Amino acid sequence: MNTSSEIWFAFARTFSVLFLVLALLIFTFYLIKKISTAKGVKGGKDFIKILSVHHLSPKEKLVLLNVLGDTFLIGVTPSSISKISSFEKDMDFLNDDNETSPKFSDFLTKKLGSSFKNKGTDLLGKERK
Image (cartoon, rainbow, N blue to C red; front, side, top):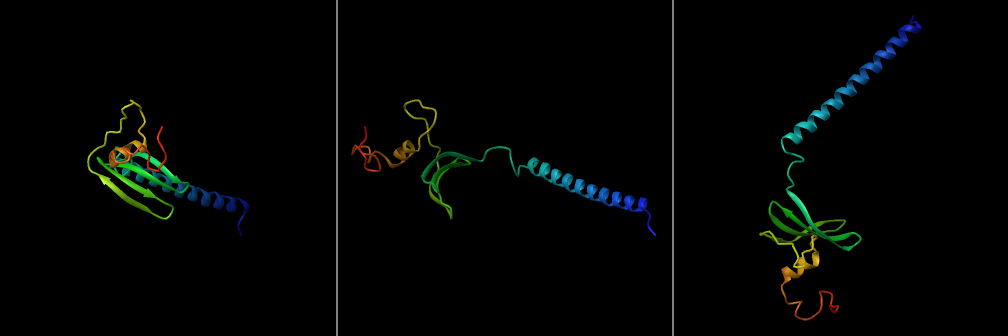
């Protein structure tokens, strides 16, 4: 027949083993995270940089990325991500006005050339001021 003290001893032993197993599991995950960041799997240098984002609608946007020196224009929708164009050389994003933040429209104008500028309208057909 079990006495009251034996039941409490078994209860304490069960929870101490459970605590030990959980502590070992957390320590193992911590070590895995430290080892993976040390080998460069995560963190370190920024290999992918977001240069600019242009929202077309609430769920659709164009994103200009720099990946290891190459520039990519991608389209992002809720159901897909598509590469639209790639540019092999680095682009100069500094405006002639000495503004610090690049504008997406300036980049597109630079890439499309002066064909739209000569007509005195922007890409949507609105007259420029």
